[in-house]
Image (tube, rainbow, N blue to C red):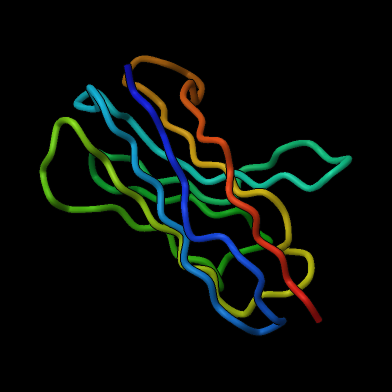
Length: 123
């Protein structure tokens, strides 16, 4: 069974940078994509960025384009997949709980989720 775990959240000031990491462990050989989502209290969870494992195609939400970079570990490992989210030029709207998720080949949605890591921005 695949498990996902995030790390790297914390408190930053406006304009600062933060890097999140996510590790999917277990039988990850059939990973189609992994992604970062963000949730703010009272709002729906929204996708921030995603990356496909085959080919490496990336997607970014308009609110983070040019500031965030998603990347993945290039080491071939069928039991572990790692992605990162480099977040630059933070502003208060970037606050929230950041979740990592994994999508399996042949599935239309992300099925495995981490518990989230808090990102807080102080002005």
